[in-house]
Image (cartoon, helix red, strand yellow):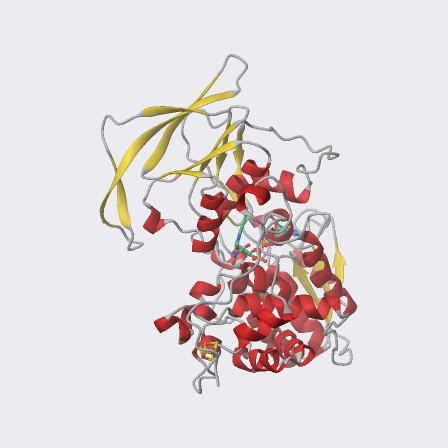
Length: 463
Ligand code: FAD
Ligand code: SF4
């Protein structure tokens, strides 16, 4: 008999007023009893709508059934056969629009907390020394992966499982992509990213750090080295700015730079030598997950933080949970507000930001109501730091100049539905191919591309 409790089993978490001054993880994870209670809410629907909502196709009701039985090792086997990074996706995937968005329990109450159960199972496995690192015998064929974000890591893991020798080339000194340099410690502890990367290494995946493809080696050189296919998973790391006066003042950061200094370069640790401005009044421009992460980091660094966003709360693109957490932690939301200029002092440091009020007009091409300027409504806000979280574009460095490789009008690698590009031996996925995705979409693209690479290489005689 299913547990018909309408709401999810609550997730234990740090108190808002405590956590907004530390970088430890906000959510603390389920106990076995809480996980079993939640797992018993699953109805084991015959048509499994939740599975259809998962880009990596996890057999969700099957692993949940094992949790309900208390056989967590079996749950981990099912989960990790389908998903190379379960502790990560359990924490940061937008489940509300993926698996949980399709869950029938969501019709009359809250959906089954699939993400929380996934996290529980992955953490339990790590605590009990389990790692699903079995691979097929080596088939003697080599594939290169550019970038170690969720797209590259998933592609590498899938190929390693099939018996390929895979090398991942990563520009940074640490693997993980956005998981390491973007998403803060308090949402995704870096020890967990390192653990998932280490599981891939146990599968034989070779991770080459500090290797900027396009500079140290080019894609044609990778083919000369005997790699028979290349997967481009180089993400979308180029920040965008508003092109308003004052954006070159000291104290204006792109969210990417601010978060990289804090997360990858550990500027939040007292002993860190990474330079960062400890702003007293920080304005973050934007309303997505990146804006929430930057704002919540600035708060933990001791600032009063305002989010300035040009539309209303209903249009905020960030996950509802992130907005909720940011509000609880004391971030101020200045909605229907848009910056027009940033002003500095004689030394060129940010002193204030001038904004204008907006109202919502008719829907635009995205279907969201267009923000319209309220004439004459300019006002000034005091600020010593401004963080621009307006979105990013792919950095074409790894693939620019590669003969025969098409780019999309957005500058992404032109990829078809198989994750392939115009070159038969080059494949692309994640943000490099779409410009802006999510962790789970990047993982889905990496998994998809691994299948395409396998089909392509099987159709071709080994060199
Ligand atoms: P990335 O994660 O960007 O990884 C690309 C990797 O390629 C990087 O490590 C980069 O250094 C490397 N690289 C780039 N160029 C080269 C080169 N020339 N040579 C070698 N290596 C190279 N999504 C969610 O689902 N949930 C969230 O909560 C969420 N929060 C986010 C928070 C932030 C701050 C950001 C920035 C993004 C967030 N996203 C979130 C989006 C998600 O992280 C991305 O969609 C996802 O990481 C894309 O994966 P990827 O593998 O394509 O690229
Ligand atoms: Fe269980 Fe929800 Fe999936 Fe149905 S849709 S099988 S209730 S998780």
